[in-house]
Amino acid sequence: MAITARSQAPTGVSDAERAQRWRPYQIVFWLVCLAAVIAFPLIISDPAITTVAFFTLVFAAAGSAWNIFCGYTGYIALGHAVFFGTGCYALTIICAHWHIAGGWAPFEFVPLAGLIAAVVAVPVGIVALRTRRHTFVVITIAIFFIFQLLAENNVFGLTNGMTGAELPIPPWSGYVYNLPFYYVILVILLLAVATSWFVRHSKYGLELLAIRDDEGRALGLGVHTTRVKLSAFVLSAFFVGMCGAVWAYYVESVFPPFAFDALFDVLIALMAFLGGLGTISGPLLGALLLEPAQQYLTIAVGQSGLNLVVEGAVFLAVILLLPEGIVPAVSNRLFGRAAARKATPVAPGPAGPSGVAGPTDTTDATGARAPAPDAGSVATER
Amino acid sequence: MALLQATDIRKAFGGIQALDSCSITVERGSITGLIGPNGSGKTTLFNVITGYERSDTGKVEFNGLDISRYTPNRIFGMGMGRTFQLTRIFPRLTVTENMHVAIRRKGLASLLGRWSASSEHARALQLLEFVGLTHLRDTPAGSLSYGQRKLLELAFILIAEPQMVLLDEPAGGINPTLIDQLGERIRELNRQGVTFLIVEHNMEFIMGLCNRVMVMHRGAKLAEGAPEAVRANPAVLEAYLGD
Image 1 (tube, helix red, strand yellow):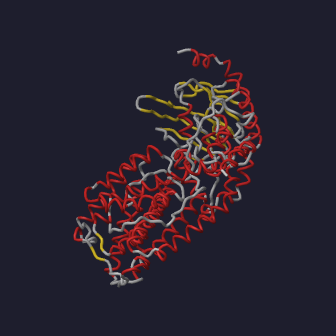
Image 2 (cartoon, each protein chain N blue to C red; image 1 turned 45 degrees about the horizontal axis):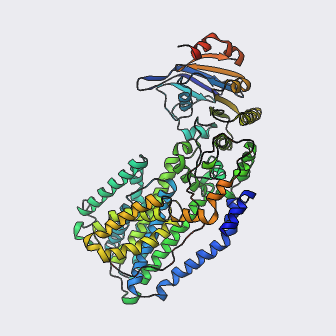
Image 3 (cartoon, rainbow over the protein chains, first blue to last red; image 1 turned 90 degrees about the horizontal axis):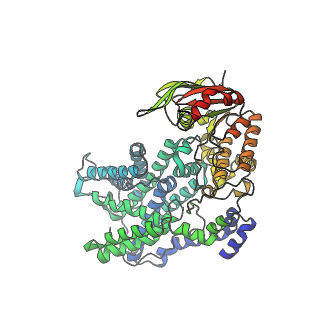
């Protein structure tokens, strides 16, 4: 297929037309993936494996949500654990305050927990988004540590400090324990991916991408950059907060260093970078590759802290070898995008003297990879 | 009443007085040229007018409204578009996507709708045709040549149907054929009622195109008038050759 596509490129078959031709296969591919993800825990019911699968979905959902803001605008936030932790504690406090019993009831408050995380994201976003680029990254990290310290020291009397807080005990046991959590987080994941897709194809998403490419120019074309950035930031916090809430209920208790976990900040960024920043499927693929590996490493070498070294090394390797991520790289190969671009005839009349080559990465979601449900083999509690 | 009137603009960067009591007037429906030696403050004046820089003192009026403290997006929304000396496009978006960024979006529904299905899509393609970039519509804008980028930048400003367009060195660094084409496009738009203010070093281009030329020197207006008169003005020659 790739050869046909490439050879046709000079004769005027555009990328859009080529993508159009692939669309039916793409839809089938996604449907197969969806069916596989739904059937997975029913077929392979070993809790050791479904636990890893659950964590993978948590990260896939959180990574997709992170990507809606960070991937599309290019603002790399390393503090989304603030919203994950807020979601954790929001559900914990809601359940304690309203005496919610274990069972399906706590799940009903997951959207509310997400909403609370979104509310927290408004002032955080207003402060952090006053800065750009590297300063923004540093500010988000700083804000993250502020939240972690607030939780550890129980400053507002909400978190119960380092003693931790308990959630209702789920009534399920043994082989079916993971199932409700798995399907709830799957629904959140699907919502996050659908939102990401919707944003990517909307004018709103186009404004986010324009901000990534040249914020000043976008402002000069009437884009309300502050409003657009803040709304995407809050939207991503909403989904990350819901992930935190489900995760907290799953592990049954929350402690500040686990709810507000610096490793979470780095991992979701790493997953998006590995899969492809700003692509719809990138964070899914990244989570699928990295989360089982990270679970395995934590078990295998976690005691010596070697897992952190390995994760750091992966981050470096991704930045050095695959700066655009797997999805754009594969997509370029498959669709002959780069080749087609080189072969695109320069206009005979209005050709400038210098053909300025653009960056090689695209932000298209064509040639997508989705989470095939072959999660790793070792289970652990985070 | 003039379409654009900047009065007594001052702007300093540290010890450098980039604009020193600069006043200009652009009449509705005109093509006005703005020339001057390097460092005379032309681009700074553009930045002040379009909201990218705030002047220290002075007033910018557009359509009789004081826009001195407006943000760039608000000024663009009022019908004033600009291009940049080093073109600023969105390199990782396709040419068509670039066109859609500048489209006015009214209401949440339009914002959340798919851009490719929007009613303005036909107009975007029409404007690409106008500047001759139709065959490159699915290409990432970053792989366009310098001249093509200039045309794209002009096209995506036009999609918002501005009353006035400020061009910063539109002919700089592009080939003669394209310069002629560009001039033709500017004249055609001017006939449709768009007012132009053009900064340019290419004298042939500017003298042939503009009905009025202003000369800036050391942050202030030195001379103004018909192209021939300005060209013959001894003070202008002094500014370019002397010092």
